[in-house]
Image 1 (cartoon, rainbow, N blue to C red):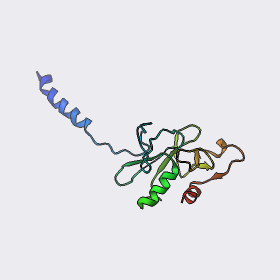
Image 2: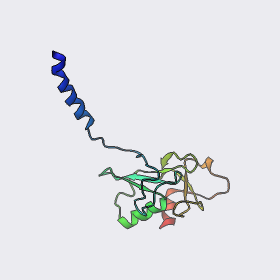
Image 3: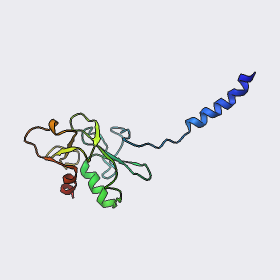
Length: 143
């Protein structure tokens, strides 16, 4: 009989446990071919040039199809946290998420919005002879 009395309490406990609001941090899941760029509204389908960031105060994730869209969005929207926010970009070879600020970039690549910048986790993965630039240099060239 005691089991039947505890059953409603356990049900309510697990119900509230499932409703817990989780504040995410880090890389968000991309719904490829459904999510859209927050600047140009193009569908995110290129798994080698996608970039994302999370607003530090609201925790809202912003996704972009090309690093150039993100840079222009920062300027157009006058984003105050742009120098401190964590930004992730996909590696041009593996497609894994890497820190955009720590990545190495090459120029003159085919990218979704034709800005031409591809990100790499390490310099060793870049072909010899290609121009290698930093995140800060990408920001300067897009502006």
